[in-house]
Length: 411
Image (tube, rainbow, N blue to C red; front, side, top):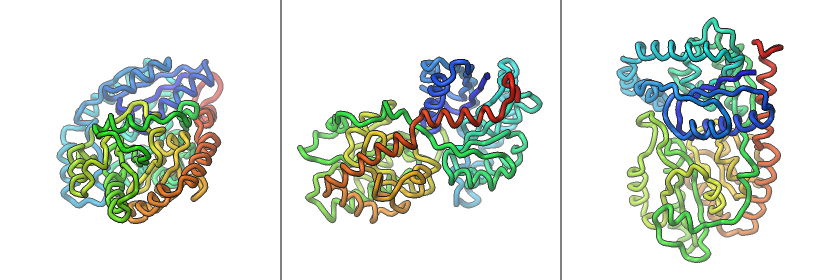
């Protein structure tokens, strides 16, 4: 079976890391599969995929198209829509040219199945009209909350053979938008051999953040995420400030690990914004900003408590699965897709989204109770191995593929 994957960007966000795990499992699970990948922008995804033995190539998406997005329109007024409309002005001509290029690539490769891994590549499905290929849209977002994407995918849904959702919540949302398109729920997976408990080099976080070494016995609390505005950095910092005011003697230090990875404007914090917020909250010297880490295993192991604080529904939250696999005690927004597989108080502490007061209280409890941290970490590891392994992930997605193609790989 020849499978062509489409990904709009080359950076390594959550959807891209999930894609790499899938490619690794497919390559190892069925060597007879022929795997190909087209990427819309430069970035490390290209080399990472090639290292797995995948035929990965760049098909450059024009910058005016790659930077367009409607994620910032949630709850915004007419001005935001008009701003996006101005950006769309040159898009039709650029889009037509890109669709022709993509169609040539697909016709030359003649894949049996096309796996689209991002919203922008779902919207490129018209490039393959009339070609004998099964089309799978992998959904890593709530498309019902994206005003323009929702309308676009509703119009294009006759082109989708099936969709894969990374949580039950995303699946429910997708069914409302896509109607009769079959939606299969497959939770993301991680390499639980790589993401595993191990020696902690906690002082390394201070080096990466440019901070003086923390005193002996300091507990490290951290949020690992891109700088998207809904990922909860502000909530985490407000909780940190509250915890420092209410319990100033607790031996803690806080870390934000990440970067503004994507091209879409206005949807991300800058590093300067976050440093300014740290200063205004009186946390200078107590919060470290650690740049994006391509291999975050050491970061998770260095943290005593992992925090997930997204302020709106999180489709899945790959960092959650990674931190749990590393045996970290975790405080997690229960509105995340990964939390569907967790048990409150057993393998994680789960809280409502966006509540800095509750987050501060939960962090305080964990800081003061070493036994609770240990129990949560041990249970987190077991849950990750049982429910979030990438072997399970790859196997379930391959089952979807095989249900969509017949003998000789024909759709």
